[in-house]
Image (cartoon, rainbow, N blue to C red):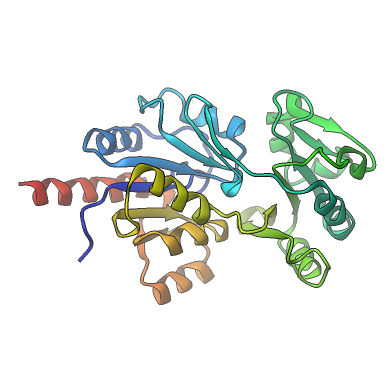
Length: 293
């Protein structure tokens, strides 16, 4: 029997957002507002950088101090953009990752600075396939530096790195990373979109995950682990699903992840297309009302 829910951490892409849309449904928005009104802290946790996530959450009528865990845990801020915590990947590690990951796909580094140069890569042509839409959405933040190592001088530490390519390419890239001298100096989070044959490897400072960031947010809010729920659909959500007292995996998650969920005791929500987050929150709010009655 779980204690009353006091905090829910929600992934964005593939979880709160429909697969072919960047708009939160009205039903989901109502459920999010109702959760806050009932005293449940709502936290968003995404692999997107903060500036790329902010437009998706604007206009939902949520509290200005709602926490957003961005860049897979490297940055925690509020909906208004106030930075609560920010971690960096050492430039020397980032330089080493370039040579390891370059053969497998596009490599991008994210910096904590607004405008052009927030995202740095060395080959725009290489991104025109699977992540072309991402490039167009972020074009004003992108700076091309070739070789990429020139942007990673000592003291210019990025927030995170990212490699993108096909499923097979990123599996090979992750294998190469684990065999390299850098494996113990960074954290690797994998996200897969099989329908698009797209996979992304996010490289963060060692120990930084969504779960690590969620634990720190919960501590800041005075919420216990057992009072926390996490909802996600991909491999980069595993850290927060493991830390939360209640883990919820979306029905649209990969079959392998849903199999893992069964062994961990995580429940399954309807898919993102069926507004699974709203379904879970509505059920939690109903149980909370019953408990209070």
